[in-house]
Image 1 (tube, rainbow, N blue to C red):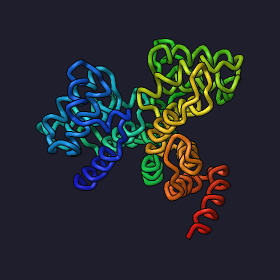
Image 2 (tube, rainbow, N blue to C red):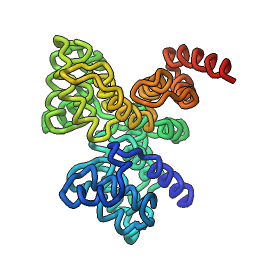
Image 3 (cartoon, rainbow, N blue to C red):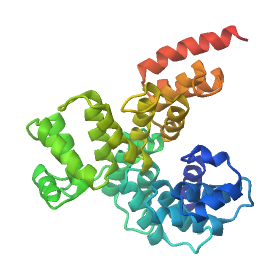
Image 4 (spheres, rainbow, N blue to C red):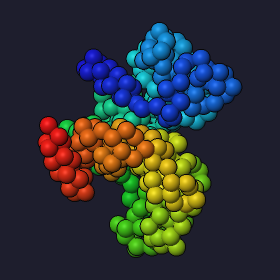
Length: 344
């Protein structure tokens, strides 16, 4: 079982895409910026040591730089630091320490950490086996498009959904929200927004989302940005959408990364239209499994906007999105396939 877990975690670690085009820089350039305290450079330097790209693989160095970035609040670094502790790479294996880093990153809305935390609970690694908690974290990752989490959810045994923070009554959620839990505020906000279990009240939803967003809770920040983007319950305001999408995206929240890419692609919220920056954010979200980002990035490749035109990569990405039921991706995919066939 541990071998399977190890392989799953390694796959997650190695599939994590860098947060910046700085990754193409040589290690000496990154190291200079990392020493100066740049969290993104610290993270990217750690990834290079972790993967042995441009430097010899060195888990000890990876651990050092992941920790520095993690201590500055970078969710991907926190997740990867947890992986090193779980696998005992560069440091003695410590499942409790791994759990603590996963929890921090998962609480920021980082889908890979949510998946890893769910896996720990499902397998009873460093914590008592708890299928209810596993389900809760898998569901949060799956909502961001994490395919592995969705697969794990389908295989989890049924659990008794007794009232708890994982499956609370409305009254319990209200209590947790009033005592300042950002997760409870966010979940109660969703219920108010959609009228699920409570009277539909968009103003109350906005209030709750804002409370959670002000605490840095990425899912609430993304939801608040979405409401401003769509003009739902508020006047459409792209600058406000940008204000909330950006911090959530920078925490690694996949849906917000895709949304930020849309703002860059369309030049909204005071941003200069920039297909290159849009492609960076789309790729981050696409590699976490967000079908909308896979579609958006595929279209950029097909049109050669911000990226070198690449119909093969466009077909691959659009196929992923279409397989998840994205009708727009399926429509574009048909055109791409027809173009690729005619070019043969």
